[in-house]
Image (cartoon, rainbow, N blue to C red):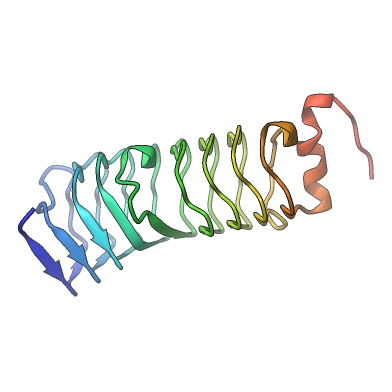
Length: 190
């Protein structure tokens, strides 16, 4: 890839029918852009911010996300497990990530705040020291996942088997206990 785009703002543009230029984007802002079902394969984003954008069902095979922040974005069905894993570093605030996949991703210390993570696949991922702040984890999958020192205290709809995950020093609220004991069919009353 020969194109290099630095420190530019892209606002209210649609890429569902036209393609974003294949390039290395550094320190760029994408504001209220539509990338739904767009081809973002092989593009590199470094130190970029996506705000109010729709990336649902975008193709992100071999796409690089290095120090990228997503805020108020709709990101349904994204296969992050297909993107470039080298330097993968993301932050999500107030995003809808339902039905996305982070399968086998190394994403320690990632920050999710006020996100919908319904039916997201975190299987075999490294989420150590990740913060899930006020996130909806309804039917999210955690199997053979490293959750050591992860913080789930303010999140809800948590259901996982502690025996299938590494959870040393993970933090949960008392409200999450039923979801951690779900496989035992135990009824807890307060």
